[in-house]
Image 1 (spheres, rainbow, N blue to C red):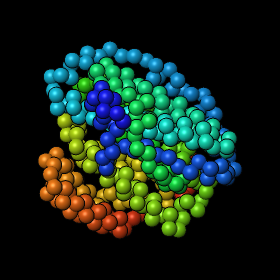
Image 2 (cartoon, helix red, strand yellow):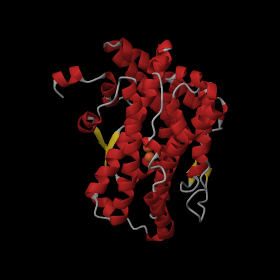
Image 3 (spheres, protein in one colour):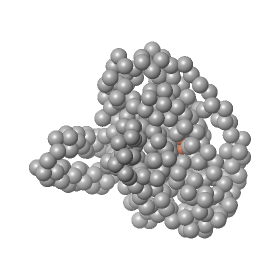
Length: 353
Ligand SMILES: [Fe+2]
Ligand SMILES: [Fe+2]
């Protein structure tokens, strides 16, 4: 990127481009390997899902507008900062899904996979566009074309894309529906209208997760043998990342009138319950050792973040030590006992909204 481009880029685009450990990432995969996907074992459910995508019930939902006075957020700069952080991180995640699904559609010859990816890219593009309209009204829209061209891409093989994307779609659903329901019960805490969109929004994320569940169930070896260790790894990585990231936005949850830790464990419970449709194991998030481990990872991350802000060589060395301690904590969490899960015959879970 040229210096001139950096100088004119706004802070939210800059923030979306940063490659911090906890920031949402952009992915590429082995598109040719996806040509061999054979969904015939789940054809009946697949076809009904494609019919629902074609029906496109949320078509008009994201075209609606709302009245909002952006200066109302200026009375509480700390809340505004946490809210913007949430929006920028969400738009990065939504848009990264959009780009990944578009790229798969463009590069794959398998008609089933291409059709699914086209529908999901359509939805994610709407979601990202809707968030960007909110950001624009607050004067800080993200430049999505810069994000697409300048963000670092990480390579994941298709099976890792399945595990990670399935979880992020289902966790996205669980987060949106939990926030939506809480604000329905506590309307005085709804400080921005975007949260009213979450109920129908989360239906899209739920459906995207169902699609990945079917893709995995069509290839049962992805859910057996040593792949169970990978599933365990992704569950823990996604849960711990969310826990640390949410605790970095205290003002946001205070404004919602939510306890962050309780919110996160509710989201884990919902995600764990849904994931029984496809994963042969679930994490025991009620194990006190699990909870203590997540707290320890949070403390280590907070100390590392403080050192990063301080800068300098000593900080760098100390942060190296904290990274080792964090990896060791992650490893201990990884080896905690898990709950086994017998996969149901019926794949598609009943929606919980
Ligand atoms: Fe989305
Ligand atoms: Fe999605």
